[in-house]
Image (cartoon, rainbow, N blue to C red):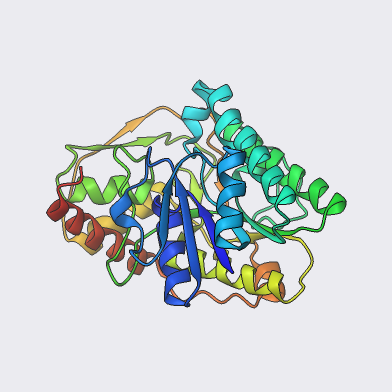
Length: 329
């Protein structure tokens, strides 16, 4: 039996693959390598180039490798881009997921783990936000993920498949062993951008909006170390294998940092000052989103090990240095 990881050559997906391999799982990766890297995939895994929405290919892989669980990471993730290209996001995130879920049902895959997002909440009226809060996404990205959650819920009621949808908060950092990290060219993740600027890979960075209704005027987010995030997926897989019912759960630490606080942390950890300019608010950016993580801890037994912003930043900085050696820019 094996686990199929879509988008397993990307940032979070490659960490998941290493987690599975470290745990002795037979692992198959399906990735079109548009934003992922073949070298980021653990060599013990089977890497197949292709689209997760190619149902015939997915069904063939399920049959050939006796796949009993799918962990679905593939998709597009930049909120402002989704505002500019909504149909592209609905295609990549919703239509492709529909085909993947349909293939899983046809091939009788029993377990499905989905990378959802806190963007489904929009700007919640109560912070920290729990899973029962109204879903009011403010971007096509958030809506595309909400649609997949809806498809999974309906599919699980109609077919013999169970799922866990993890609503990520802001993922950052890199593998403590230095095997993989955020390598996407032109990435927009705040910690990634700040680390690149600290290491002079960028001349400056921009803070988008300083007039939000927060303590310092910048957006507030809950930052989670990627290693803790992928372990949550491993916990979700164990939960489903043990007969757990389908579940939607937040995956965050329960505390937030503003954009300016993150930038100051990067300056402190790197020991370098760098140029920061201000710009206008970006469309689709919620003001403040912080997880209420009680449910995932109760139902999956998840406990984070890297809940420290300086540690997250330090691992991200170390990865940026290793990327320079690889000449990945």
